[in-house]
Image 1 (tube, rainbow, N blue to C red):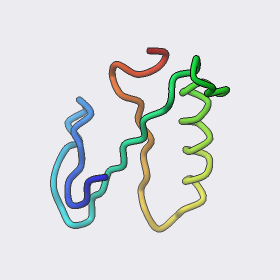
Image 2: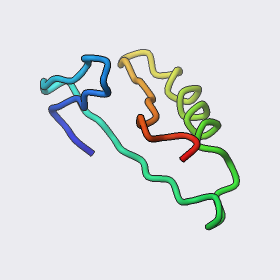
Image 3: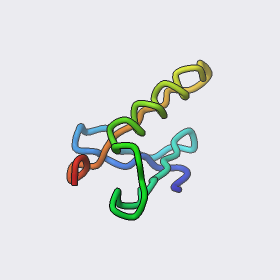
Length: 68
């Protein structure tokens, strides 16, 4: 977790401010028991945070992300 900075995801959206925070989630490999694809997990998180209207929350997969 990083508070006070926003990781640049290649879209030019990096920056710093006390209003920014980022959280990185590392998923276990499917061969170790994860049943859902990373794409489905990301969509479930998007759906859940869509209910939060007081903040702009973006869920981004890493560039090397799904399906690797």
